[in-house]
Image (cartoon, rainbow, N blue to C red; front, side):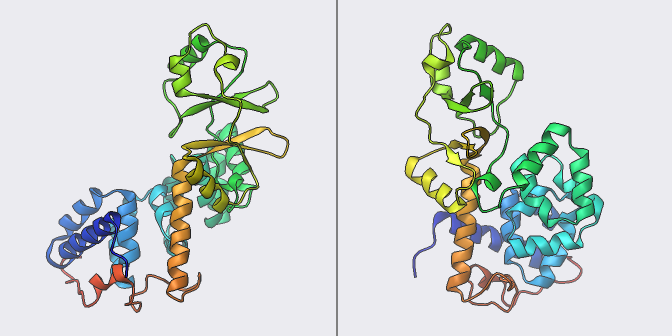
Length: 302
């Protein structure tokens, strides 16, 4: 059996420390530890708990739940927890999510909640979310987000820099700006490196890169992940069949794809299918869950 990676060892260490607090600590200590964790760590904890203890821990998390935590969970567990949440909790959890994340989460929510969340968005964001939701979730279109910064080829570098200063911030994982014509067709990209090192009076057309690794909206997500790996990409533009820019995919989106593929591979090796509860306590063969066998939590602690 291959040795555990550093990430796996760190996860197991977190799980061990959390189990110790569950067994020997107070309610306040359990809550404090959850508050100090990253959402990915909390998701790992929830997925690793036997069902009865998971429900108790979920009760501690629930008042402060956010959509990012739900998105880090296994599909089946996420669906189960969403079914137990009140509409107002689901609406609150969706607040602040980026377009692509919101598009991933909304299809799993009740129809009335989905409508309420969409109506709460401004017109531009609502159209963006609905656009992403129109694509199959296993394609580049379903994976992309629409927070691209688009510039025209005939403006100068100085104008771009002044625009960015006025804007005040950049979308996450931005390593380049998208150069489009007046109709929105992708012409190239301007990397932040070229932007900062080019002459202020030079035009975007002179500084931009015309050979762009764009991705068709219908490309399967598995192929997108391979492309990012082979080309060492941080982000890539997504185009429709006519070459018009409709969004971009970033490395964090691809990491989610890789994680999902790894989860599916793990389930296949364990002889499980997508409908089974991978995290039920009867599955004692999972290495990361053996820590919980025989653990009992005193009622006065939880």
